[in-house]
Length: 200
Image 1 (cartoon, rainbow, N blue to C red):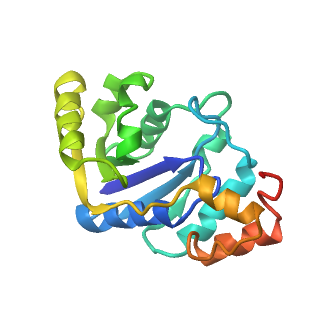
Image 2: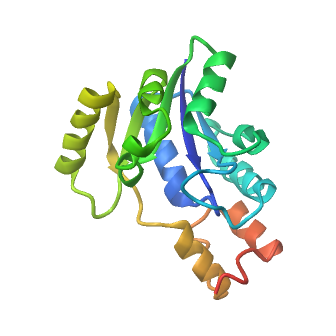
């Protein structure tokens, strides 16, 4: 069984995230995509409590039968690292092949990841080209990581939409319509819970 994992702060989860997950599922024939809100990531500090980010991820997961939201990292104490998450999934399902889905911007940070070599042994990466990134540059980077870390990667054909959580938060704070940027259930959740009203 091939399982895709899409992690992120999801503050909030948006159509860029779900488009990445759907592209990976369709191009790589994945049976399941796990939407995984970060707990306490080393590179970012979420603004919104984990239970609310998880609730939004669960609402986004309703859009596709292959999607499933997980609270694995939110339940883990201390800093959360990808290697620990991959090890946990391997323990749960030793025969599963794990595909970690990242944007090309995140891929560039891979050498800074904790135990990058171990991550490379535990998963393959599906890379989504971000707007403004050069495909040939990313392919060269992927080849470099294959040599340095033995990381197996695949660059998806589908381009990632030009949407960011920062933009969604800013528009929500200004009272603007965010319906085109996030799944309907997420837009309603943000409205009902008055999220991001103090971001500006």
